[in-house]
Length: 197
Image (cartoon, rainbow, N blue to C red; front, side, top):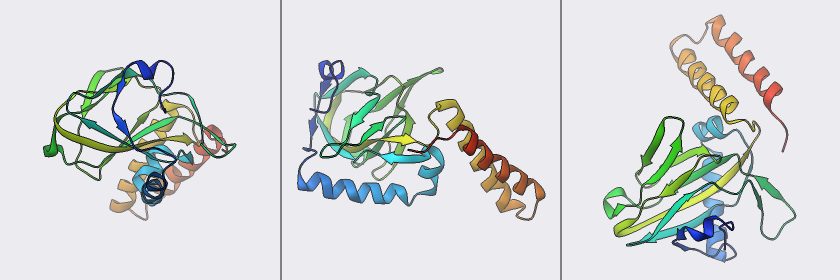
């Protein structure tokens, strides 16, 4: 139901119905948690978050290579979310299943990701990605998309690096004038590159 016309051809998994009370309640828990995460905010610069969804891959299931739809209508509303950032929250421990890695393709090749339960990966929604076949156990995850204040992947990545550098520098030299200059630069770049939702 949630795959686009190309993705549906390569998608083989189970998904909690997004209209179910359980999915809505769990999705609110995930959304509130990521909104409290400074690291998530720094990486995604969220303007809008698509209500989180939940999937399960059992033995033999996978999701072939695809790119996420660019625009997602939010069910039950007139809102649409431009999907700048994709996010996967791992809910199963890595030892609970074999296979099931999220494999994201970028300029430098394919990168497999299999994180502990409770860990989240964000990556550009423009990335070609897939979920490797699960061969044992079950992989359960939440996934969602973010419309970022900064649409451009490269600009968002530079802002993330700059923000992390400011935080590190402020910890070692909190009174340094460079921290103030870099913080000013960071916020002025967001003003230049950012757009309201």
